[in-house]
Figure (cartoon, rainbow, N blue to C red):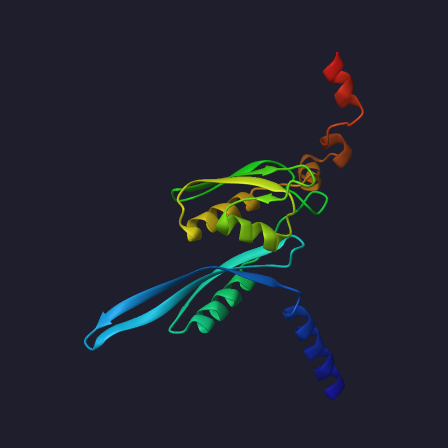
Length: 187
């Protein structure tokens, strides 16, 4: 009996603690005016990822900063999404993401480009494990909206494998032929 409980406990530990990295994006101090003065609270925005294609964000509010960060991190781990990466370093195709007045444009990039992105978007790409990407934020500069727009765009991404499966074809039929591309350009 004890042996079975031990195995179950080990499995739970293994599932709960994969290697997640987290990045604090923003902390906001908010106040509530009460009869005796002001009561301060803190709101934290955190991005969490395994740097291998999974990422999530969360927000937490508390009277103390560490507690707000802990709550945000827990929420981010619950809301993770998986994104297929090309060669483990960049996106499969260019895409747009929107949330409210925020719009972000994300483009694939050749090897060695690095992450060209501003503040909150950079945190998402670093936690996702993207090494080469070019992105631009248009509209809202609010970090909450920028992260939501980025996640919205990443959800829209489709890998060649998923497109081939949806169309009932092989991956080789979907991807452009590398040998034929220069021949067509010359003709």
